[in-house]
Length: 499
Image (cartoon, rainbow, N blue to C red):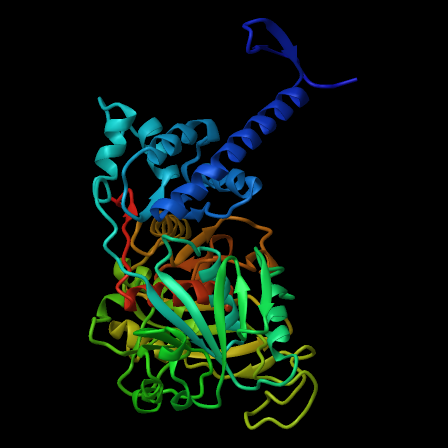
C-alpha cells in the first residue's frame, strides 16, 4: 500500500492517471537518469572531437557519471534558489553539439538558467541566443599546437597530475604526457610505478586502463604511452631520443628551488620550460592561477606554482581585499600530515616533525602567509601564519582571521563570496558551501583551490574569521595544470562571459 496524496498527471498517451507522491518521485528520478545518460555521449564527443569542456555552474561533466551530472544540476538550486532541470539544459547541449565551435569551456547550466529564467536573449530563438553567447569560439579553427610534458618525479603530486592529464587525453588534448623521470630501475620498479598510478588509498582507482610495457620501458594508460626514464639527475637525460621536443618539464621533487638550481633541467636535450610544484626562491615567479598568472610571459622559462596552502588562501584574500580591504591578519592552517613527517617517532631535522604523524597534532611553521605577498604584493607585511599538522592523510583547512578596512556582516560577506565563486574570474579557484554537516573527507577530490565554509564564517564589525577547506593534493594539482596550460600558451575561453 502506498501513502501520500494522489496527483493527477497526463501520461504520454494523454490519458489521465493517478500517481502517488512516491510514484511521482520515482518517475522524476527515472527521467533525470535518462537525460543524464543521453547527455554522456554528447559531452564525450564534444570534448574528444572539438575540445569543448562542458560544465554546469563550474562543475565539470567530462567523464562524469550519470549521478555526477544529476548532482551538478542540483547545485544550481543552491545558488539560484530555483531548480534547473536536466530536460531544460538538454536542448542546449544538443544544439551546441551541432555547432561549429573551437575549443573552450562552456557552462550549459549558466546558459540555460539565464535563457529560461533571467530573460537573457529576449526575443531570440535558442539558436540565436547560443550563437551570440558562444560567438568567441563560433566558426573559429583550433590554432593551438600540442605541447610535450615530462613529469620529473612521480610522487603524490606527480601521479595526480598524470591522472588529470590522462582523463582528458585524446585528439583535442594539448598537454601531452610523454614521459616520467624517476630514480631507481630495480627489478619490478615499472610495475610498482604503474600500480601506484592505478590505485590510490585516498583518491581511489584510476578511471581507465593501465598496462605495463616492459619491452619499451613504459606505461600505457587510456591509449597514451608514457616513457619511464630512469636517471639520477637531469643532465643525464636526452628527451629527444624518445621523440620529445620543446618539453614542459614539471619538477615534482622539490630538490631544486631557485632559478640557478632549476636551470639544471636545461642540460637535458629537449627541455624548453620548467614548472616547479613547490614554492620557489630567488627571482622565480611564484604563480597562483587566477590571481597573478598573467605575469607569465612567453619568454619565462622557469615558473613556480607556489604551495597548496598559498593557492588555497590567496584567491579568497584577493576577493576580500578587492571588496573590503585588509588591514592585517593571521592565517592558521590545519594541515594533513605529509611524507615529510615520520610514521612513528624517529629523528627529523625539523622541530616536532620527528613525532609520529598519525598519532599527534604537530605545531610547525608555514611560509604561506608571507608567500601570499609574492602573488598579491598589496598584502606584503600584513599577514602572519602558523600551521598545525593533524592525523588525517589529506584535505586541510586555512583559518583566516582578518581585520578589514570597513565594517560588514556575516550575510553580506557570505553573499559576496558566493557571488565571487559563481560569477567572477576566480570561479575556478573558489568554491562555496552552505552545508552545516560538511567535514574534511567530503572535500577529497575537490578541484578548487579552496572551498569557503560559509556556515563557519564569523563577522563582527570590521573583523572576520573565514574557514577555507582545500584538498591539498588534488585541488593543488588542478591549479598546477592551469599554470601548465598558461606556460604552454594553451588558453581557452570560459563561456558565457561573467557579467
